[in-house]
Image (cartoon, rainbow, N blue to C red; front, side, top):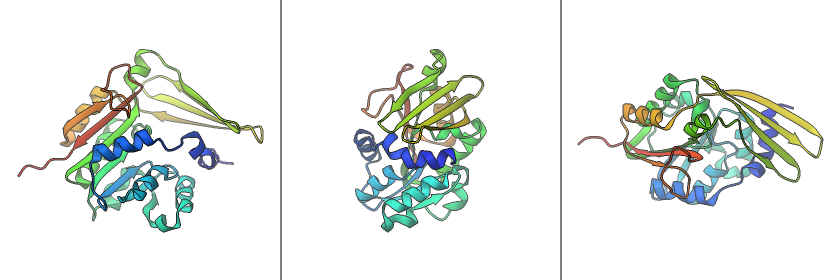
Amino acid sequence: MDFYKKLSYYYDRLFPLNKVELNFIINELGLKKSEKILELGCGTGEFSLALLSSGLDVIGIDLDNDMIENAKQKNKNYVDNFYQLNMLCIQDKFKQQNFDGIICLGNTLVHLDGVEKITSTLLNIYNLLCNRGKIIIQIVNYDRILNKNITSLPTIELETVKFDRIYTPGSKITFKTVLYDKTKCESYENETELYPLKQKELNEILIQCGFKNIMWYGNFNGESYQPDSYASIAVAEKILCN
């Protein structure tokens, strides 16, 4: 069985909806009902569906088809809200639309291959946002990872599954994930390269793309970003001059 097909089966158990994270996003976006959000890297759609249930109009995209099919099966009323799509293609797919908020959570952004593609994607995000629209980005804090030579993230272990995440640092980080299905005594492995995007570099890219009022947090409790924070969370706004 394909790694991502298996991961999509266990995804919601490994990464359950975090209400603190959800409240942070809703409060930071400050949107009214029916305003439009795009979620990049939506996985199985749990977060997008929670935002939909709060009255927002949400579109979720993910590169993996199994994740998207899982999302569509959860609520038949929102089948048309989910697309299998590479985030590099959002400008072409949604060029006739504008969004009040765009979110990119769960370390999704650093799956892009380097600064050029990250910059291009953030510029596309800027172009798709309405005036006063906001972007929220959450990635692992690579300043901490590299400074402390961290080689793994905490293992997630449940009754039926175990999930290991291993880093091999370099100019890019090799990210190895091992999913062990305890019920079948089978393991599934995957490796991908991540770009170790540091906080200062991402801040400069956001400025370059035209974003204003950039705020930085170290977690979804709203604590300020520090070099040893576990996460880098950016909230930035598109403001057009009158």
